[in-house]
Length: 108
Image (tube, rainbow, N blue to C red; front, side):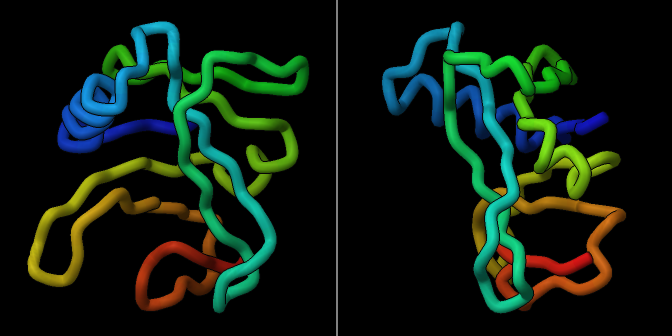
């Protein structure tokens, strides 16, 4: 399961509206190779569901994850921060053994 904090939920709703996406667009989270730790998070809006997608819903936000990425993301919480050390979405991933300083890449 993948969850989302209240702050991330608010920011997703704001971004969806600001970028002109309708309510039929969900959040797609995936993992790709790259970054300083070996794997990178990818976050986008998508309205097409693939056959291998798992869909989670938390706080009214649907989160789509492909089967391959799900192996790395199970138990992850999507958060949003606007603090002094940076602004943006953060992944609180219990599967990550190491993360880079920017929080955009990780290794398992």
